Length: 317
Image 1 (cartoon, rainbow, N blue to C red):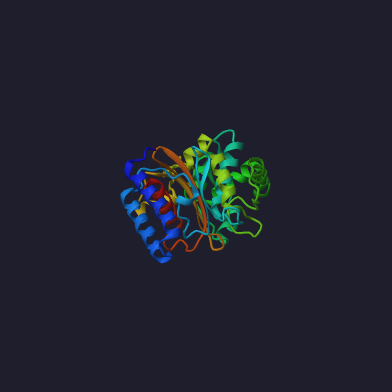
Image 2 (image 1 turned 90 degrees about the vertical axis):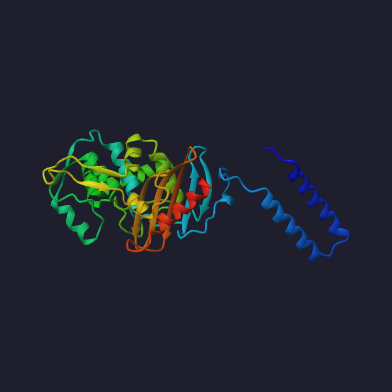
């Protein structure tokens, strides 16, 4: 970067003042003089508005979320961390792994999968989030994948798990094997939905590893970045169902940066707080942000979305 004459002059004056104070100027007067010089230097040499974030220190991590990690995907560089290796409850961020493992194990995305009535009662009892499929519906596998990711449908997740592995428990083994394979050191899954369990845990750093890996799968990326999706007709929904991403719904209500945050998955349980895994494209570069542990619930301000907007704004400006 070129430095103008004013920059060099300011630097030499500051050096001169440091030498001068050692011998002649009382400490309290020198402190004020130096502060004035620094203030003037800052005004005369502002940071350019299109500068790129390139270090942890330039991102403000004073967030609502208790845990966070921001990564420049193009450079594979961590830009900000906040308790990133601390154990968290991932809530519905779990469905990122569920969706990835399902995609990697499905041979035919158009195959019809039965959602038996017997699997719904436990989900209703647990007050799990649902996509809108009905008991005994036969839905296409691709529709279940979108149903798991966009509206965070637990019935879609369990339907996929049963089809692929024969049971949710067997499918969870595949999830844990995948976690180990890709280097998620502090993660253990006990279910495919993200419903709270004390032994169902991870870290935002592990989820950054997972999402970075998953985004290399084009089918996953297409689903993850979808704002809206309409299913094909089924035996119980002849007109199909239209899903809208829970993240984009809340992001649009904030009316900020919708053109730059290009994909995401929300999560919430009382124990996990508000969580978000998202990606943004800013100044031609792609960034990944995982946050967890923000106070609030579905009825409050969505502080996970607020944090994402704040962090990505700092990159943009």
